[in-house]
Image (cartoon, rainbow, N blue to C red):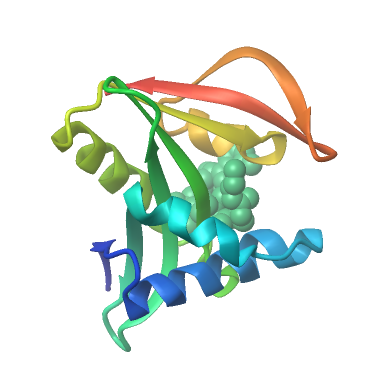
Length: 145
Ligand SMILES: CC(C)(COP(=O)(O)OP(=O)(O)OC[C@H]1O[C@@H](n2cnc3c(N)ncnc32)[C@H](O)[C@@H]1OP(=O)(O)O)[C@@H](O)C(=O)NCCC(=O)NCCS
């Protein structure tokens, strides 16, 4: 079965999370993980999903505070072989719980248009106009916690 965990910045789990994000999100777009971004991630909450059978990290995401009220979810990724098993839903639900516990009232994110339906199924609402960033079209999605 799968277990959601908090991942400490700088730990070996964090390294595994960076690798997973690269494989699922960046490599397919021909992008590289830029090492100089790492220090910026020290203040973020990192969440992972572990396959308890072999202790492998199979999913993850980042929560980055915007201000005292709002926190932004980024880099939501589930390993290709583990997609469509409910991990994405469970992981976002865990992220909502952690964000609420940390005192935030609003969860925001920029979703690629192809996954807007996934976030709508989790209760997120689209806000404002769609926009382009680096040739990819995104929608801003929000959920009150
Ligand atoms: C998007 C992602 C995080 C979802 O994780 P997951 O573990 O596969 O999701 P779940 O199994 O919890 O939910 C899947 C269900 O969500 C819904 N869903 C998923 N994508 C959807 C979409 N684009 N539109 C509508 N519904 C969608 C479907 O009901 C789907 O059910 P199915 O598996 O029977 O098709 C995962 O597929 C992924 O990492 N994709 C590649 C990276 C990516 O696009 N990340 C988002 C960055 S904004």
